[in-house]
Amino acid sequence: MGRVLGIDYGEKRLGLALSDETWTIASPLEVYERRSLEEDLQHLREVIEREKVERVVLGLPLNMDGSYGPKAQEVLQFKEQLEGALRLPVELVDERLTTQEAERVLLEADLSRRRRREVRDRLAAVLILQNYLDRRRSARP
Image (cartoon, rainbow, N blue to C red; front, side, top):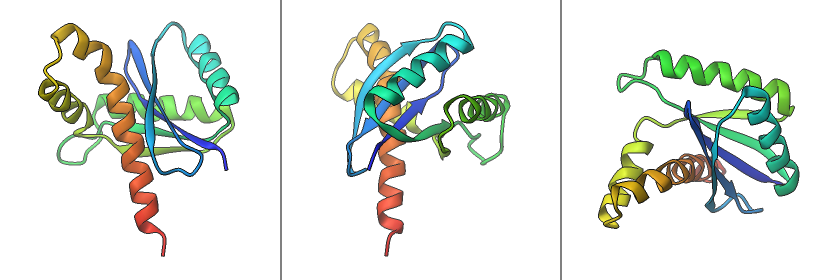
């Protein structure tokens, strides 16, 4: 069984997390500084090949009422681009509170503002992916 790649989408950075082979635990991978769409997709292809990824999970930033705002529309467009370029299933996960949860965890860890910024996107990707893995496991009979 291959791994699952979790992505926390941002205009400037993509937070990336990776599951283990059993789809049980999410671990931080990296924060990728975005360049152009083609370079971004090429980098993701390389990660997918190197890490033997068979599925991608992308955080969907819904509004608190569950509606789709401009950022969610941007993520939906990115999902289509990923599916076309990567030829892998791309699933969406509600990420409404993951960035805030990541910030709370980092504040509790007493990290400096600069260090929090460096870690936040990676931690948000871990939270998105772990949420997906946990829901999948609890849905099994």
